[in-house]
Length: 240
Length: 213
Image 1 (tube, chains in turn purple, yellow):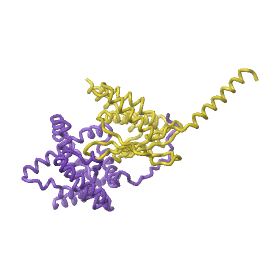
Image 2 (tube, chains in turn blue, cyan):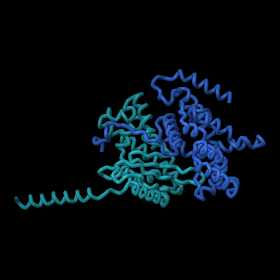
Image 3 (cartoon, chains in turn yellow, green):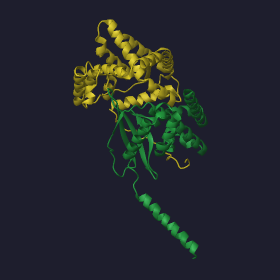
Image 4 (tube, chains in turn blue, orange):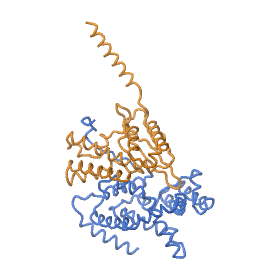
């Protein structure tokens, strides 16, 4: 936690060095771009090849079981966050998911709850803080972890601090689970990341805007208040 | 009045009647349109062996024929350009719409190629009959994960309902491109943006040719 505080202080300090025409949501762009470059190099050299090999070696059915296993453990704190946001029914449903999937679903590898019609949700501490009215703060790219904001970084700290995975013993088992979690997560993202590469002129900007939009949408559970876009020119009769 | 003029007048009036008949007929409702097109395209892909084995050109031709007519790319480009749209000449606008359309179609094709029999949940349309700007909501269901919402922002035009923005998981394509476009225009120019888009499209085209070999 102390290291995190130091990191944040360093980030805040380097914020003074930002260029004048920077995006107001991303005052630390020069530093973020440097971390982005580092992450990208790490991803190209290690994470992506490992995830690709993992995907090629393991059948999709098995990978789905792995995803389900981790997804099930997370339902506990998804429930906690739903309750913290005052969403009582949702929270109870998340825990019902965990109860069914951990038992009938054999430690979570089968998502029987979804088949029963109890829907998977997406919550974390960052969203809870957002729901409580905490502003996102500056956009941040975290080493290895990628896109975040100041608020979501603190949220992620809470997520990991409470993560049941961290309780796994012996340590070797815990670390293997961490490893599996990251490889599996990266493998899930292989298609999305190649799409991003295709669609974007500047991947950094594209990813940043997508992240910020996505988080905003998640905080409001998919229906954020619409920002009315004003384009004074009606689209267009000169082009056909 | 000679015979020729009379027949011309009749033709004129009958064409007016015909136009009126067309105008009186309501266009297909936006949610019905999205559902029909989605299911039709997905079925074509599921049945076509060449597309399934990665024939990108054929997939793009299906998109061209089935999906593109329901998009208003001029609207999309104008919205993504924001303030800069007004500064563009008609020729620049034409080139922008053209290049942006190509890029979106290629990206869309890649997304579709990754489709593997997920189920769709077409949400009931929440709009008044008089609305001319609606959001059609579809959710892609996948086991073990939160459903992915895909929202189509659609506007009513003389030629039926047209999509002018797509939101995937709450991320608006148009809004996402707006920052990118604005940055490129600020750092170079509108022509610079056109060049960037065209270069991007060429790279993607080349890559898909190389993958074919």
